[in-house]
Image 1 (cartoon, rainbow, N blue to C red):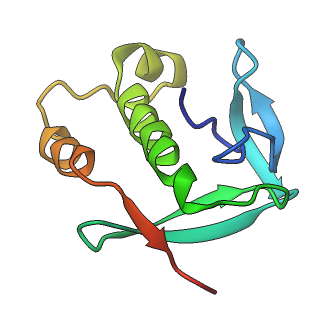
Image 2 (spheres, rainbow, N blue to C red):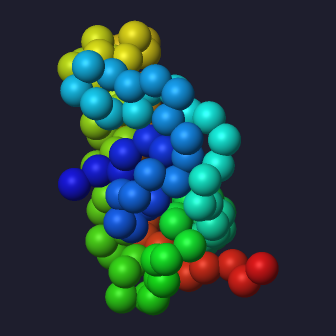
Length: 115
C-alpha cells in the first residue's frame, strides 16, 4: 500500500483536480484543490512533515503506524527503477538516498501539530 499522488493520505480519495493521467490511470499532473485538509506531523526525531487528507477522514493516534508505513512505501516506490521509467524521473544508482531512507525508516509519527 502506498500514497497516490493527489489523493487523501488515509483513504485514497482524489482531493485535487487531475489534469492528466499515466496510461495506468494514476494521476500525473494535478490542478486545483478540491477537498484538501493539510496536516503537519512530528516524527520521533523532531522532524516536521505535512500530509494532505480529505475533509471526511478523521485521524487518531492508532492510524499513525499504518500511515507512516504507507509514506515509507511511497518513498521506496518513487525511488524504484520502474517508477522512474514510468514518470521520467531520474533513477539514481549512486546511493544518494540511502542515508536519508535509513534515517526515516527508523522513525515513526509522534503526533500532530494543532492548528
